[in-house]
Length: 421
Image 1 (tube, rainbow, N blue to C red):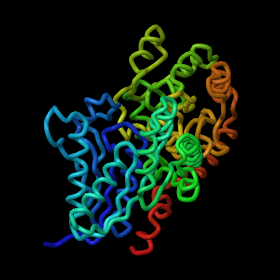
Image 2 (tube, one colour):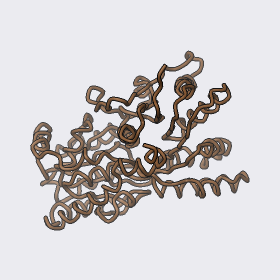
Image 3 (cartoon, one colour):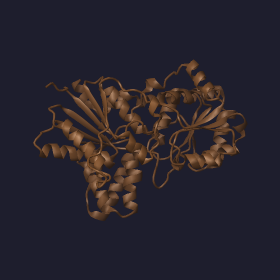
Image 4 (cartoon, rainbow, N blue to C red):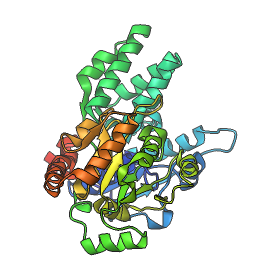
């Protein structure tokens, strides 16, 4: 029986979930095919499970296909209703054990500590205990909600045992990565809190071992979209170039969507530009209700990856007024960097969490939660900024966003793989 010569397994919430890290996994998988991996697998969840969880999902009939050589696996649950959540973890862990039992050098990357890093560590331990001697190197990448949602909630609720499990599982990996400097700092800060309470030494280990790997972006998918395709996409949506402010993200309070809708009602430019809210999320229906009397606000809940680029290119401005909430802080802002690659109108955002790492000096910045300031900034961008100023901002934005091109990010994250390819 023949086996691949090198395998990459990424355990992640993959498509169709609307999440920047789902796109991140796709981009790493695509680059892996050009770096000597001849078997690339995304280990993820059944579609029905994702739907039942209430996660915002892309239209299932318009998902972009993966390249040949990339396999998306969605193991079914093991057991019946009497094992509620563990059934799905058993399916994921069991499938990974099967892959690790084969004599194939494997790199296993987990994104989201809960539960994906647990799946990886349990699978590796099980494979070794069974005598399979897996040739595996594990990388755990902590994304924003790992810290801002899961670990922080443990600390708020005094659940020190759960926090201890999270850190020991994270530290059990061969390599530890954070999605931004902000995330790395937060990991260390939360580890210090656990150490102070429990007498552990997590902070020192995290300080020494955690590195930063920014989200990889397929820059070619965003650079220089065909003008005719942009115009056609806008015409289908009843829009025109530079005729709308675009919010394209998860529709949630922490993304500043309520602030943006209120600010739009105050803007001088509202007679010139519509507000397009593109995406899904927990606040969508409430925001729809807020805006039901305003026919200048357009909702698009079925935007796919191809149309996303076209809408970004055609907008007068892209607004993401994200702000810190107890359950979420923007730890990078992948959509910001994607927008900066497409060109078009300027980005208006806040310096929340890691967004400054994404935009550098190439965006218009407002204070989080400052609704009046947000309205004034968008008025200035649309009504007062000169074409020369916009062109300069666009040039600097594209140069900054190219730092996150998926090839460069992959080679930094997997230097051994690149060297051996």
